[in-house]
Amino acid sequence: MTQIAQQPGTDAIAAKGWLLAHRWLLLRRASQLGILGVFLLGPWAGIWIVQGNLNASLTLDILPLTDPFVLLQSLAARHVPELTAISGALIVTAFYVLVGGRAYCAWVCPVNIVTDTAGWLRQRLGLTGGTRVTNRTRYWLCGTILLVSAVTGIITWELVNPVSMLHRGLIFGMSTGWAVILGIFVFDLFVSRRGWCGHLCPVGAFYSVLGRVAVLRVNAARRAQCNRCMDCIQVCPEPQVLKAPLFGADEGSGSIIQSPNCTNCGRCIDVCSRDVFQFGTRFSGNAETRLQFAKETQR
Amino acid sequence: MDTTRRRFIGDAARTAGGVALCGLGLGLYARRSTSLPAQALRPPGAITESEFLAACIRCGLCVRDCPYDTLQLAQFDDDIAIGTPWFNARNIPCEMCEDIPCVAACPTGALDPALTDIDAARMGTAVLVDQENCLNYLGLRCDVCYRVCPLIDEAITIEWQHNARSGKHSRLLPTVHADACTGCGKCEYACVLEEAAIKVLPQRVARGAGGRHYRIGWEEKAQAGDSLVPADPEHRYNLPEGLDYDYAGEGLIREGDTATPFAADPLETLNRESAP
Image (cartoon, rainbow over all chains, first blue to last red; front, side, top):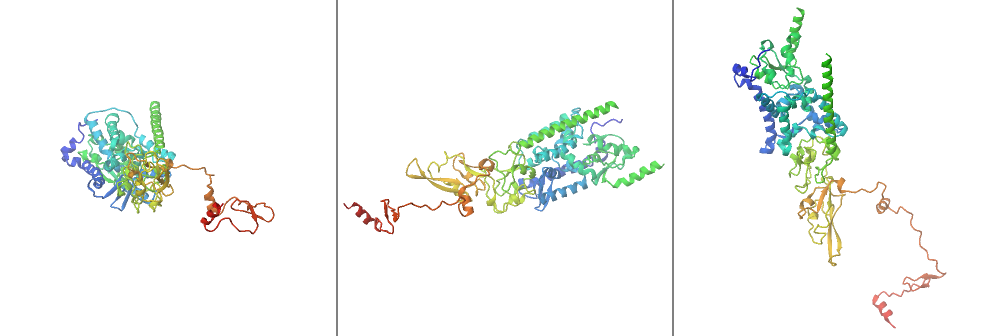
């Protein structure tokens, strides 16, 4: 195994320059803060482009957007929503089927900034260990929430959801809700690496289900150039998704990261000094790699 | 191989157990969350609390469209299901907008779009909870709750009553009529006391309910247009033949003798009686 770099991305910065080695990270932060900013423009500056919050919003008094997971819980709780909420949820669902379900986590969710910071700090401080929580937990939690919503007739996760608590709190007032966010930060920093987003958050789990058929995908197109520096594995919030597409050429694995848990954050593209990764569609590389695989097996 | 399987089963059991516990906790918390504090009122058109928590997706669009900043979203330590809209009438009451923008803004129907007449809203019911401190009950003329009521003389009326303390004054009692009260809370907001004597409470707290079999006689009578029990047979006097009853109580008179001891002029009657 190759020596793992102290700071992932050092090679990339040397090869491409700091800006290019942080391109997707910067764009992602701009997206997260930008979306939050547009929501805050109303209450802070009186410029009402968007009203509401991530659970449901109204843009320019015309475009309704609804979080499909909240709506699904509402349906499970046996409420039939008005058409506005349903169409909003369909629009959001269609969008994330296109760009990758968990793009929500990387590009929109405000908690991502908190957990990314905790993850970064954990790496800088060299903290290891912690509890062993399987990353399937989030799916079980997601299903349990729908079940409990059905049994109690109440939208359950919204009673405790830190994601909407933070986003809504920033816009409408937070009070002691900060304690919950601090809790997540501490959990990710000391208790479990990428514990919240990567193992527990049922919202992310739900969006990853949407991502099963997502069109936009990261492609390890030039994986032959990989020098196994492991920088991408170190920065990836869901490192398991990289292994097969990146190292599995011999086993016939396609180069496209098909795992619905990939958040399309693009950080692997940033930190790779060999330009292995690029954004593509789930179809783009497929035919090519399949053909390549077929040729190889024929030989 | 065996150890991996054992570990797999152990992990799965651990996850299942943990998640089941989470689910149980969430469920219990959810059940608890339907108990709304008595001073927290829902926006107009809000469906019943348990249904509301299935319908409201906590977006705050109703809050944004409220022109008077009446509504707010519950925060972490409000003891109200977090993110749901509510208001405290003593802080800012509902101004009862005619176009009901909060209901129009709701994307899910948690605020029922069937509510188009704000007078039909039932956010709660005003109750004069403290008759001992209410100025009108003390015999003063405050009337503020009555005056500010958007449905004055319907939802709150003033009922006159003898003031037994002074013996010569009236007490003018503000009286809420729940069939008209929308629960907007303007009375509670306006009450001049340090702590309001009239408060808007959720209907489940504010109102009693008779047994379902109870009937109020006069209402049934009005509905039927007549008494529901058979009328009394006409009263008859069994008098001796040829005599009639004397209305002045002097005794019996001969039938057909219509002469009455009362003159048309009361003075004359008096003079007649005082004559020796």
